[in-house]
Image (tube, rainbow, N blue to C red):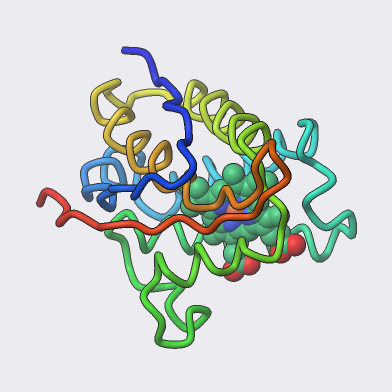
Length: 165
Ligand code: HEM
């Protein structure tokens, strides 16, 4: 099953739903999720978007860990990230956190491509379950894109569907 990237459309309302807990359980809970995210960030540092991220090793470690915690929580695991979000809705907080970076479609595609490579290396998880997780990433990542080829800046609106149980 192909994990495809759908293009961002400026002005479009993005619709997404949080991943169901199926992916979290299939990958092996917190440990599996951390392994995936650390591998992902190692690849990010070899990617074309490495310059977006801290070059300092200690700062990089912090981003890796925070990133893992966010994904653990958003995928239905324990609420290990929410203190960071300062009582904001988790997704809203995450979108706003990206506002300070100028992210265009090319950067998003590189980010998703890197995540796809990391997901390919996850063994023992059904493709259909990976696809559910992927759909969240494909849609949600559109909300991190705020810079367009005509030089304009635009922050998309979104609706969040209720996730499957
Ligand atoms: C599904 C889409 C995405 C999700 C869920 C996501 C999630 C996250 C998370 C959890 C963090 C760490 C937050 C923290 O510090 O507490 C983060 C940081 C960051 N993300 Fe994303 N991200 C996404 C897409 C992108 C894309 C497309 C880019 C493009 C370059 C990007 C660039 C960054 C940068 C630059 C940081 C901050 C690094 C720093 O602290 O200096 N993200 N993201």
